[in-house]
Image (cartoon, rainbow over all chains, first blue to last red; front, side):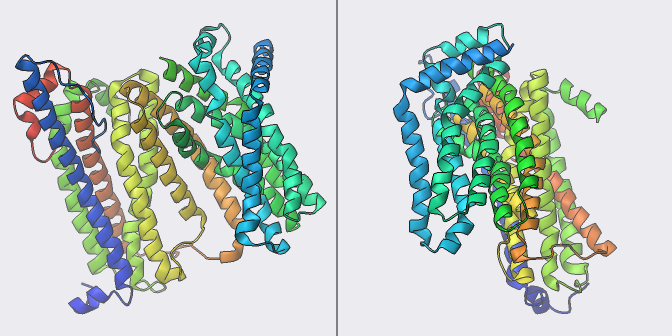
Length: 72
Length: 222
Length: 255
């Protein structure tokens, strides 16, 4: 272990804001991206399910307006 | 083989002559953008001289952007483009003809205007001539690479803005070598290296880009 | 390589690739976490202080992997684009679409961490250095690709148009890099020496490699997740998607 204390570690030899600014933003975005993908997928599945149900119950297929193509 | 290129050039030039207002609007856009810079940054001759190559080149890129959407759109609307893709001649050659015509209509006037506008920026004669020469060598590449973007965005909604988004990053080397040639003259380094690199890009742009644009056209017309 | 290629072809039908991708995703997440924790522990806890750069050099453990991924993902995208144009496989275009946002994200992260590294080291957030400038242009290329695909409604046309753009971009990247470098050497006004410490300690190298591996695994996992969503959307009129959605199998949490 390179560090003597937690304060030492957090200070990063006066470069703390830069180092932690990099790490936190990178970690946040890399966590946010898969969550966004999952969210988009859940929305898509729910929409498809509604659409299939509507088709089966004999209604006309709902118009595909507002259909967002990419879910990223 | 070259007959088809010539025929397309002749046809596109005739069509362009019928729409001279478009051409005039583009040229005035170029003039206005260039003239805005001294008003924005101040009239000090020393500063203007340093800015001139970059300003003129960026303005040339933007003016080219304005004319590119028309490259295929009119032919697409009246069905000519569909006919051209069915022609026995390779589509790449047809696009080459259109690229050359586009350069004659939209590129060459910029070259001709540039020394006049360069005077506004207090450029000396040698810098002015290199500026004109660099635009003469570089603008064909703008038409060639721009044709790819025009073909990709053909009939796509928001095509004009999208076109600039696709094409402007690809123009960066042309901008660097074009403006760099004038810069090198101003600083006494000599523009030869820049101009030959610019020429190489222009050759590539004119002779390879039409084939990529032709592939993109086929996709757009499927 | 050829072995992998054959595999991809076998699974290039969405219907077979979809469940396969679903099974692979948890593995890639696990690997990403393991490599990430190991790499960050070495980089942030164990590795010694750099003699010249102080503690700020630890940003490199994030910056270099992000830069590598940003460039590498573009190459992979161009590879899938070429495959898609050459062999007309449906999966390739979907893979390229799935990779682009992740590539753009890494490009942004590379710029962000580069700026945060530059401030303490050079005293400025941004330098028109050849590498930083090229990275910025790479971000523009990603944005153009994503925008073009989003603007075209017909997915087949979007795939092919995107493929041509990606290939044109990949041909241009060396030219752009060369031109920016040339431009940079002529404008030595903001003269900054970027060369990193000549001999990087083995421990630092290990930390960086592990972090890079973590980013690799992460990219594969996210791209697979996204490609599965794209498949569901594009194949929504087929029976297999209908069965998955109505049977509740499309709800699996991690993928």
